[in-house]
Length: 112
Image (cartoon, rainbow, N blue to C red; front, side):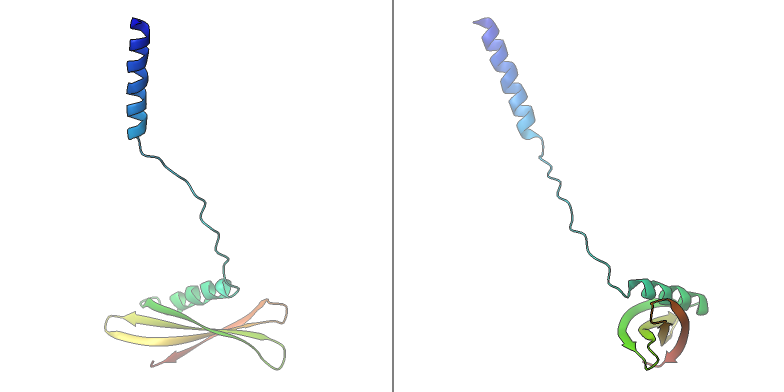
């Protein structure tokens, strides 16, 4: 009978220790698909940083994609940049060939 009491006490101790440990549940986070314009948005941010190295990029807006008459696709972004108390907007236009390859990039400063 002594062995079974010792065994019972041991099992109760193990149970109490194990029941006090937190239970962790690992769930896989769903994968979010990157939008089609993300590649060109990264290019717009990178090139704006090179063109305006003393400015901080404050805000980013994807304006949209259009197709021009010759079949080229045009991606437009607007970035808000700041240097001290000076702020301005920059519209970045990225032109792509009909096959989706980079053709050129242009910048236009805006007041708002």
